[in-house]
Image (cartoon, rainbow, N blue to C red):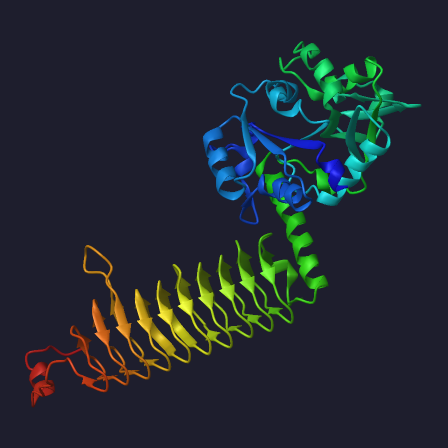
Length: 465
């Protein structure tokens, strides 16, 4: 099929506003499972090996183009400044697609279409030597869809409003996905008319004109109607998210991932999971998160663009963003790790801890009630409860470095920038403002003063109950 694919280009129509979404965000950038709608067809196409792809943008096109260039930089962006229908978009982009033998035209708001379905569709187009092919599917309630009317070898599309009562009984409908021989489309594209209620140019009219010219047209029926769910309002957005959620969960569970409660588990399409993983209820995994073999992810955990190496235990109620956790480490509960933090192997991060843009080296412990920001914590160092790296001086963030095998007493404040050597101990309650050399005890707190008789004197002059 590879040599055949080189004869194909793909045009994705993504210029529409999506009026019923009632949002300033262009429709194709609304998200399901934290990824824009447009991500899904582009991902399926590229994974199937298609390279010549263009996206037609229009409403808030600059925003759509920016996203495409960041996520799929190899894909072309073409403009439809004025949105006058699908046929109009095809006509405007003719200079791009005319040099290929065939052009596949897809809507950008159908995130559930699968690469396998598209490949079967294209193979059928090739095998039958069609001038135009379009995907169809059956619906129990086809109201509002263009009907696919078959008459011997002839196939035509009749819009719902134009269909006769008998034609409306037909349950086979048009998906809005087409393959044209570019020679056939070029021959009819200038003959499309906007003489309709919307004053727009429609691609189904190109199908009819192709057949009138004697070109073979055919509907290729797909089996799963869910793949063609279009997104026109927030309800359909949620419905598509539910379908995609189940599809992704089924894929991973078929590979051995144990989801204790699939109904409350959300896994994004870019997530990668290893073997022998247990995911407990109410877990969310987003972005380019990767989880290694033998990990356990506890309840109420949210991981975004983060990496767990092998045999990590996330106890629960943990949020990790754009960070990495090394092998055999334990994290949680009630932990927030963010902004490029690096947790090395065999580390323990315990209750009510926040780690920001810091490195915690092998075997170190941050057991509870601490904030570690802009810091480097050495190997096998123990950070006592209530420890804070005071990294912000009101103007900039400053760095704290703590060496190996240190014991940091509870409630120690490190006023950055400060460097602590290896084998250092700090006294509980210290405010460290200066560097501490290797092997030293750092003490920085006021001398205790006891005032005798204070309690009895406090009671003088106080009224009764």
